Amino acid sequence: MTEVESRVFDAVKQHPMASQQQLADTLGMSRESIAGHIMRLTRQGLILGKGYIVPSQNGVVIVGGSNLDIHGKSSHALRTKDSNPGDVIQSPGGVGRNIAENLARLGENASLISIVGVDASGDWMIEQTQLSGVNTQNILRHPDYPTSTYLAVNDDQGQLVAAIADMRIIDALDASLLHTKTPLLHSAQLLLIDANLTSSAIEWFSHQPFQAFWAADAVSASKAPRLKPILSKLDLLKVNQDEARALLDSSENDPQTLAQTLLDKGVSAVLLSLGSQGVMYHDATQSLSISCYPTIPISDTGAGDALLAGFIHARNKDLPLQEQLKFSLACAGMTLECQHANHPNLTDQEIQTWMKTR
Image (cartoon, rainbow, N blue to C red; front, side, top):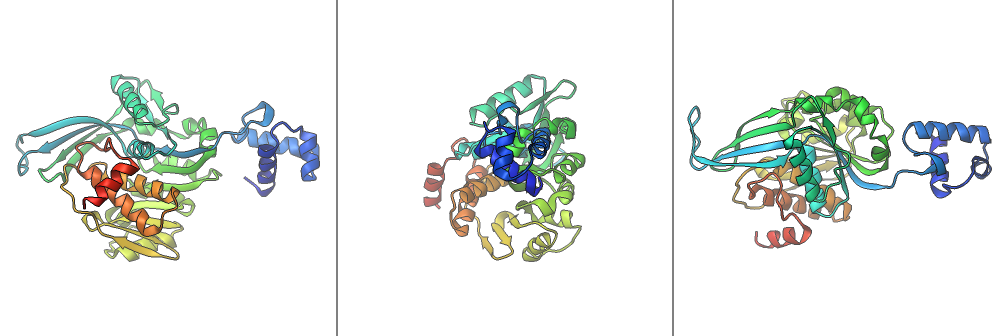
């Protein structure tokens, strides 16, 4: 959006029923110029038609993957190449979807843009996500691909040993489908994408003029490099150390250096997960690391998603940075002690109670 378009857009928001001539008089421009700018703003999805209706402001819009998660946890020390007794459970998952659910449970206005199949798994996924409080009206359905499935095996300590992800359907969430969601994307106060999106979809985002706080989750070391085109747009990047190294094509082991190098690439702030050592926040003016709470892990699937959701929620509450990190680690800790990728009781009150017991 150009500076002039921004002035026109602000005037339209303040006076949505004004005529083009009235807007022209207010801004000291010609009616013809106003008409041209309004036409371009309409094409961008910033104005929705007659009466100069603009999209309502949404809190957080998340764009990313939705999976059917199947988790197996061994009851005893895991034996490879053998059958292991344990528990197998099914739950809704996917990085973007998990973050959206956590944010909704924390009381945020969360809308999810994702894609699922026209199948029973897709029906169940949307239903379960909606029940958690997420706006699911913008989840797309694809007739030719099944809903994504994520199959994870965890050892008796809850640590991920191996996983297989069938996420072919996410490749269908391309620029043409994303373009249909531009009114919602333009309305976001915070826009979050995950690296499950294809490189071409992320490239499309790199060219969009969305006026929001931009955040991204690197998802995995194999997918993190997809975020390179939007690094300079990101207000916040959440990565772990392996993802940071993959994104930077580096063998660096020092967390501080990794975080600073990401800032040098254009990222405004980094939320760097240090695994069992805690989390680091780093931006141009401050750097702070906090250790993890003691936990009894059941599964580490979804803990990173809870960490980012907790940080965003605490940031929205304007808590001091140290409290933001403590809160986000508590969200991750509660999720570690849950057999699902999302803790069903992830609320401010429950988290505060959990923190007092540590």
